[in-house]
Image (cartoon, rainbow, N blue to C red; front, side):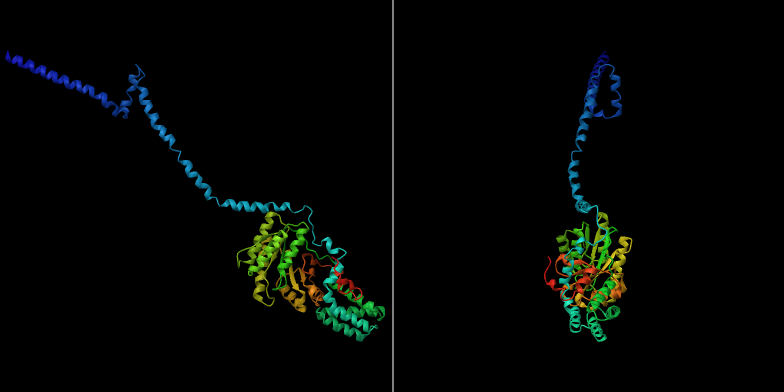
Length: 438
């Protein structure tokens, strides 16, 4: 009996203990379940419970939405990185500078001249301006000729010998002097040998034949027309370029200047001053840059903006220095590569005050490169203006322009007829020369 009671008590105690632990274990999943929700097995159970209420789903669905919202807000820092990009755009200023010359073709008039013989070259004051500019020259050998004729009214062989001596001393060169004297002899023999006027007429006729009467203007048909200006030091190349640019600009041409004299900083500055004064763009390189490269860039730029004329300065060089003349040949070759054709004009600037030395310069430059025209400066300050005849006769190079003063308009297109009339004017005909027609 005692044993039965003990067994029953043990069963009761064991049952109570079991009930306690079972009840506690059943209560634990309710608090632990949220930790196991991320596992796929727990998320697969809601569909079974879904048949009754749909209440358990929203809490689990709401939590992912809250977690994704911060992710959407994360792109907000991106705009802070974008403002740095504009600082890496230095190309913008370059584009802005190129837009300015692009508008320049509008400046050029549709009807541009095909020749550079402006109307003002034939204006009524041209002869008087030439007479004034050639006063010093006419006071030289022309005045001496007039004295011969005034002393001897009869034209005899002895007088003709004296005429020959005067012509030989006139810086026109021996070859030209001899040819002019031969023309005088022929004319005097034709009219009977007693007329002073026959001698003056013969001199004028021969001078016209030597200088030619065909127009000597520059042809602007090809665009851009490249004009290389060459010559020795000190003849006035840069000043000539400025005066030419002023003239061409007045005629409605769009002009670009190339600072090809890279060996003298003063030459570049002087050309820039002329560019600002005339209103022409100046293309230049660095100090001691290759002159051919500067001219090449100027031609390409002029082509891109539709310019009519490129006038290129070159470094002055002694005509006796072969290495400098070789360098000039290279400049011409580089210019022709830029143009894809021969250079349109090579103007040789000569100083009239050097007399027959100018004839020698023309010879040596002509041997190195193709010279297409002559610009003779400082005719107003020398008695050696007869050198024009010697250059034209010996080298058959047309004279394009002559300088008879300091002003821009004093660089005049050469007109053979007016020049001869002014040069060979007899003293009584040329007294008006001292009055400036302007």
